[in-house]
Image 1 (tube, rainbow, N blue to C red):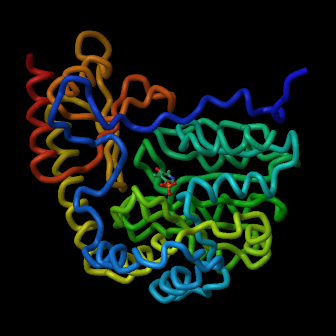
Image 2 (spheres, protein in one colour; image 1 turned 90 degrees about the vertical axis):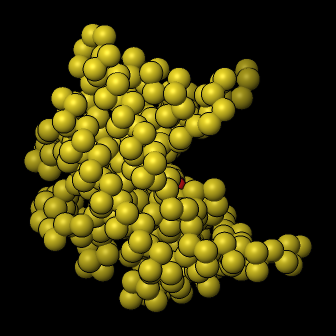
Length: 362
Ligand SMILES: *Cc1c(COP(=O)(O)O)cnc(C)c1O
């Protein structure tokens, strides 16, 4: 008999990222992967160059320099930060590897980030998908789906691809209804963009409770997607577990130096957040004027819903692609009538709106 993988693995549909190129189109505008239109901090790029020596030496396996920079900026205990050199995706997967026994359940919402399902199936867990209300996480429905086998609850806040968020109060209510043995994983990949007084990224929750973990990434507002750096803030006991199972050198020297420089450049992060707030509002208003519905997003992307028929999402995608604008089809997220658009540069945003206008009018 040939080698057989663990139960669940062959049920995984491999993740397909946003397209980066269009055959036959030379100049493309990639608005399909929620990358930063401003790129990284110049200080992060300087750090990259400066770190490009001693490549023959192993990195510091504890990622100390990077964890200390994060801890300093957010006022956290560096011992409770876990770094990852394979994005926050790897941390989400590590949590499933550490806490799921075969048949244990992991809960997430209907249009949640696809990595949760992959991480669950890869570890022989049972994905439990909970319905949403108006494309928002429904806390009551989540709580109603909890069973004695629920080990993990994954929530992206804000969620990708919907762009919606739940308030601190709702997150507290969700947590209060979970057994103490269930780990609540708050994926805060887009938290730096959120400008809402009733939102909390997860730091307060992790500080207060033993069964909450927050994951963060350098791929989005920090403009460093190419380097695959992420981190988690977790209770001491969870850090102890993750430090046992992670790779011994799970971040590279360059990643550590670049991450530290990027997170310390608060002005650059603020600039990216300000750019986003301005264009998120503009895009939402302009696209709604075309008669299309757009969710109230708090992230760096919007979800656009197209009507059935000649002006549907697939046709819009074809029209925009042929003119170089790449948005993200989200059929794999259960949203076949929608396209997700990343907030881009001024030029990209104006171009996309004018093309959408032409598409809807033509
Ligand atoms: C982009 C994204 C991430 C970040 O992934 P990395 O592996 O850190 O690049 C995590 N969660 C969500 C919901 C995302 O959209």
